[in-house]
Length: 119
Image (cartoon, rainbow, N blue to C red; front, side, top):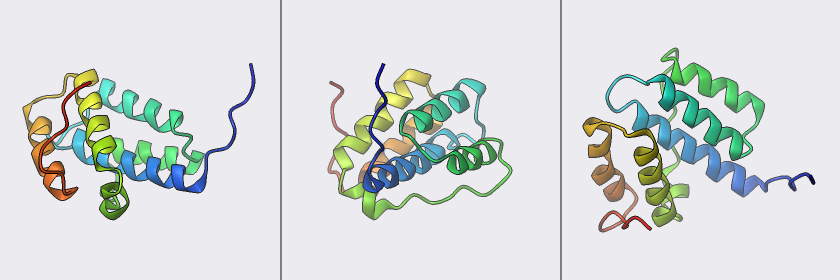
């Protein structure tokens, strides 16, 4: 097995901002379940986030620090991809109504006229 090339700074920044957005989504119902936390940590690892960011993620998932706001300007440039990623996460975790309601708000914040269809 070969090693993957290092991620570009732009890719890591996008990944970090996407994880921050996912934090907002999983906390929408004021609690994070073990499956939600584990899936988000796995996603962050797959994105190649720095170990220090992974440690911070544990703190946020445990509710031990205020959630960091995502950089919406950066995410807006990739709005369709972001919204599809959020939808995929919600489906994988079978996330409840409170968190699903946030999708419309995210669409508006990211400047999307509607949520993209599942593919």
